Length: 94
Image 1: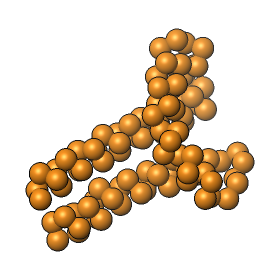
Image 2 (image 1 turned 180 degrees about the horizontal axis):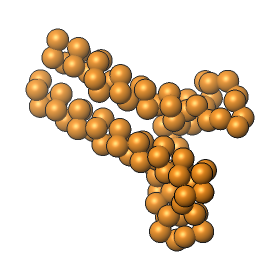
Image 3 (image 1 turned 90 degrees about the vertical axis):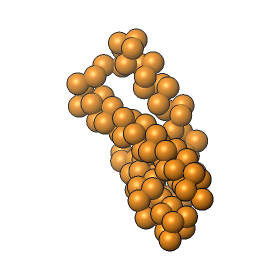
Image 4 (image 1 turned 180 degrees about the vertical axis):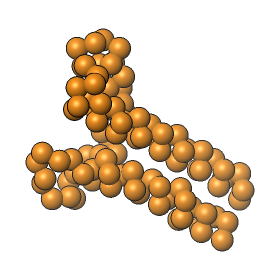
């Protein structure tokens, strides 16, 4: 049971840091600290979007349309934190 917990916790930790990188990078792009015309920045941004779009799309369908503000990353980020820190330990260790 501990091995299953550690494996799931590792997966959730990786997802947490990928989402954190995506959120911070979106801020830096919006505040024009990073420029998408640079090839390296564009490649990282495209890769992160391809990784996380399958996670964000179902959440966007459920949430109301707040056009200038996308709340899907925030909801997904909070869900990953809740799974990693509260739900997973309660189910597998508790």
